[in-house]
Image 1: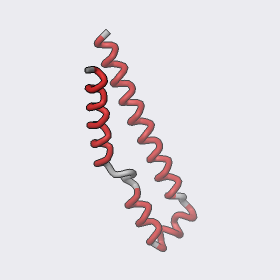
Image 2 (image 1 turned 90 degrees about the vertical axis):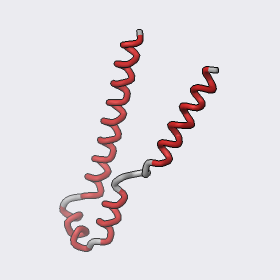
Image 3 (image 1 turned 90 degrees about the horizontal axis):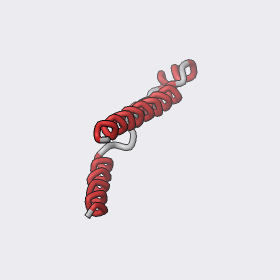
Image 4 (image 1 turned 180 degrees about the vertical axis):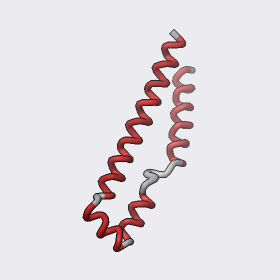
Length: 78
């Protein structure tokens, strides 16, 4: 019974993740590749690297808050 409940939660989670886009910054990167002026600006300020770092930072912060919330929830239960 517990495994079927966990499997159903996993299926719901997978469906939610499938609806999300892979990366919200893809539109910005495509715009940067098509704009010539941004190409020159990118030579001075590496926007691709900045966007990649911001993307990784947001993922790390999101994981941190999810883990923190989970740990607080587990602490309340026990």
